[in-house]
Image (cartoon, rainbow, N blue to C red; front, top):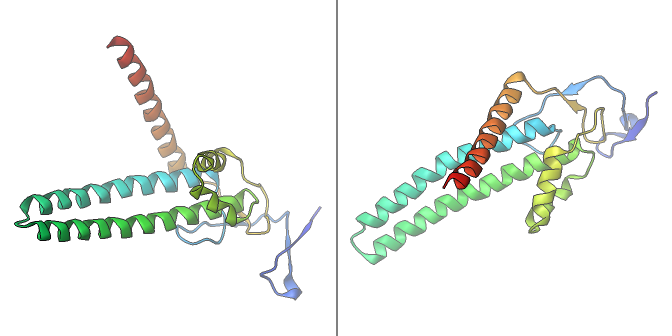
Length: 180
């Protein structure tokens, strides 16, 4: 059984997508079009978090060196302002990337990308992120795109290693607090 889905972005002659299509779409790393499943969403955000940590550490180290070696307060202030601007630009870029992954994840869930604005609402953003992380996406084509291709094995391996390390750290913290 095929059900026609209206798509306002297609011409009137081809204004329907077949919902039972076996075609799969290949997700892009950047952009708001398409869909990503929950494992790819987790891996993309984990990778970006690691990358942002790798970038932030040298920025803060340079800020410390510039402040420590400044001869005057005005030079120290200028160096500090430069570091704040650099980190601010990186943060804005990171927020834009995070929003694009959230939009594509919303599309996979069959929801509008405008729900991504919930990440700016305190407390609700935590529940929204957990929903996007754990909710199963739609299996077939929806109004935004065909279903994404399955994740490669290395995505599953990285997620398993990260979850294992997280649980090990959690249990180690509990055991350490009990023994102390």
